[in-house]
Image 1 (cartoon, rainbow, N blue to C red):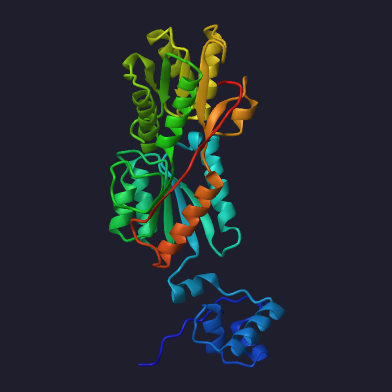
Image 2: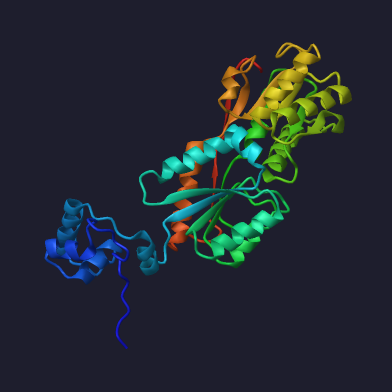
Length: 348
């Protein structure tokens, strides 16, 4: 049977350099040019240099679709967010992650596609898209406990990394911030200011960030010999409106609170608005600490003491770990946790 070859110049337009022209200029065979284009190690250094010089001189661009047939790579990764589009584009945390992943890919040949999965139907659609080979790997973020994608992608052997520790403790590769440690330090800061009634405005408890940040608040109280008071807890949804509503509930439940740890900066901005409406001064009457160190933390009134996540490091780690998974160089359960730090401003 004759060997099957892939024509990397299929569909070339008139005037566009072809693989054959590169081969003639470089003084090598067409097969050698193909191997160089497809990054095969079976090429001598001299031939590789000659081909690369010819490619640069002719400004030859390989047919990407044909190349993917040879390499079985699309040079594309997907960033999937399990949130409504309105929250994806309004929450500064999501914007920072997208920007960071894009920056980490800037010096590579990889292209980023952004997908949102608002419900189970869209999750199944994205899983089918990935299984069909349209992407080389997937980063999943903002996962909720009922999300289907981690199981569906793992079962299909799609290279996968989570942005955030898995909710159920499953063995899967992930990169996360030290959410629990950051919340503990934030609460310890409020206790260190002499505050006696330190409340918690949590994130969604079906998300691991919400669970871990609440756990950090509980741990700090326990370390100080205090029992968590249910009246000092209100659950939010990581949005500004949700933070305002939850803060109003906290004031009804515990009007004598004098401090509050808020599990995200957008919620903290909403909490500041609710406190102002209730006639409470910040920080004189109620000290407030947020989480994220989003840009809004420096512009709100008063500027927000908050816990900073190392987003640049996290996004770099996400890309590095996913590329290693795609290349088979990292285990399926490798994880990396990045430290957080307290940033002190006027609100506490």
